[in-house]
Image (cartoon, rainbow, N blue to C red):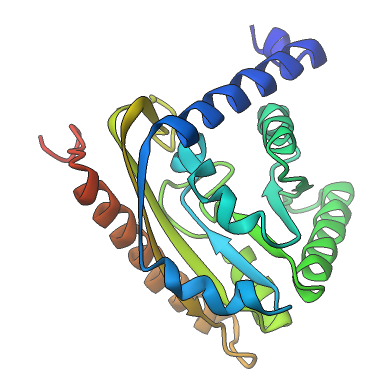
Length: 238
């Protein structure tokens, strides 16, 4: 089954299916945006930025498309087979991908690919584009940030924006990220926060502490979005 799912033809089909679903949710859900004014400055300027949302909100994330279509843009996506159909879906939605993931110790080929993706990401942001990142992907833990996005923000000096996204009614997948599968014609909310910055002199310890703070911050925004649409997580309600 795993081999079938990673077959190129299957990946193409899944990419189109995911894209069609994401567009359906974007167009039929009644969306509201809270504090969206915080991005006005970066949209009106030539400044680059990073935008973060949790991995589990990918299926409903095109809610922010009209905002970021105004700038050059890319998504940071895992180069794995599982990430391939998502990259294809986002390409259909006019969000090209930069393929990058963490490299295991001793894997020099993957390490070189990570460095190349890191440089491509910094160039995009440095040239005034926005990099969309799910900072707990591609393998989790759920709603725990890895430091990659912060390292890019530190080196470029670019502002970081957070996006808490929710839809109701919605189901949750059994995946590690408990992906939110929203229903068409429901209610949706995006709660924005930023701009946030990483100090240029931040060392690894400071960035680790910042990731703890930012993880809690993005989770609060996501819970706020859930409250706005009346979504109650059945796991949290137990």
